[in-house]
Length: 358
View (tube, one colour):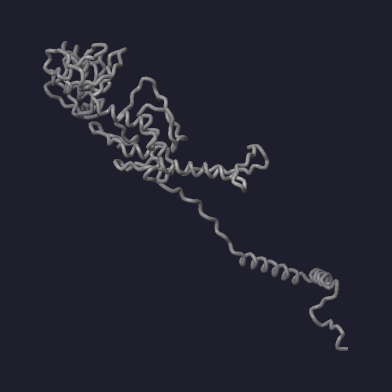
């Protein structure tokens, strides 16, 4: 009987699993302790299974790279040549878009944009390339610094076109001239200090070689002693060194010239309408808000008639006197109150002008 099949191995007759479940159910129904133990064993197996599965920690959010632009406050990647780097990124993005439509034979597939067969594309977000001005250490993205330069040159500029060769640009404001030299857009300069100008090399790196014509033109004009005639309705532009001095018997009239168009008198040093009865130093001492021709004429009349302006000081209930313009204390000398604020205060500047005229 060696060939007889034995039923002592792992073989289970059909229906044995259902029979076990039936017996377990009825035994647990009569014995709640067994039921509680079974549920505890199941929970232990589930917990062991969860612990054995490796847990992948959530990746921390990527930290923004690069410093913030001082104008738009966006993070930018500092580059030696931001315009060239942006141009390179634009070329790579354009080539990548074209390669998405290529067939196996290298031809471009003509699939309508609204066709269901056309795969959806995720817009590429180009990197923001920036620049640091070495004079003041301020950071700017290339587009923001380029926009500042173009505004000073009185030219329209779309930041979305940064990194491209620009076509002919229109004037930002009709009749307005370029402000040159150009300095940092965020630096705060103290009165009497000269701002550090943006160099030609910096402009080339920020604007790009193909877009340097307007900058070079403004640079050339700045080397000339050009005067824009300030007389109303004239607006003539001429080189002050090419104009003969206007005849005058005034000792300080070396800077007096005549406009070749309207024949009006003006000062080639101050580049304003001629400040009669006033030297260039006295004119420059006037507040900026009082340098118009009619203001200068009024000051001359006031000096001629010995008029005096209100001393512009405030008296406190404690007995102190101080300047309403700069806040400095007033001193009382020879029966007069005088501001002690120094240069930069329009009240103090006026006092010096009146003292100089006696």
